[in-house]
Length: 330
Picture 1 (cartoon, rainbow, N blue to C red):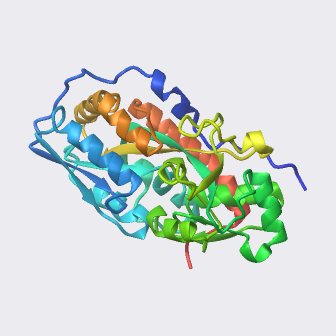
Picture 2: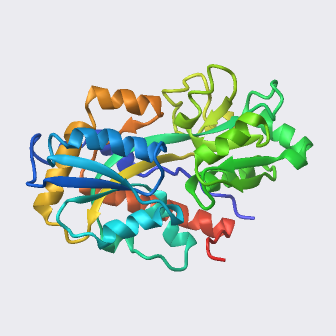
């Protein structure tokens, strides 16, 4: 067998995003009365929270009123399709995780959209690390990922891990972690972390991979134990938890991101106005407090940096998905 190449699932553009200068004037405005941020996930989900907090602040610098529209369905495809079909006037904004644009083209034979053709990149919104956590279904003396893998190997009937979505980066990250450990873990896909968490907390689901912020509220009371995080460095929200690499899984890492997009053919002046507004609101201290609660870090960027981040992410994941052999089509 050929040795597996080192896999770092974070676009270089993400790392440089914080160094990029604002794309426009700090108070650039459009003449819009109402704009909407379209999200493909339900109220209360992490992307929904990000969208609502950003929308509240965009109302003062981009449009007179900014609302959030939850267009759920097909794992986020409904939201992307809705923005694709919208008028390119700046009034309809997509907030999406990378997966819908960088992963789905490799797992679906046919999509109702082409990311690089039907959407205009505006700015990255936020980044986050994933975390591998266990609940009461795993013995309390299991405190590291190697210890969990040893327990899973000794208890194959319980060697399961959940993720918020089948065919997502988090699903594939778990597969790669399992492969790297040489232990066969069975994936259990859910429709979002909200659906999976009760099973983890009750012990029905032994372990789960999800954005680190989804576990933070349960850690202090001991209901969940975070065993590892996926970033290249320790996560600032769980500084005492070692990364996957620190625990011997040097080829397995992930920093995921959310991006803001407009429909294709949106005029450059409108893209510039929205980018300038996002540059302004994403660095506000009040927004940082909200992002901290959900384990996210603001990462405003230029449109060009977001476009490059998507290309890099798609290129990184393509061979991994091919090797895993996953397809979303029945």
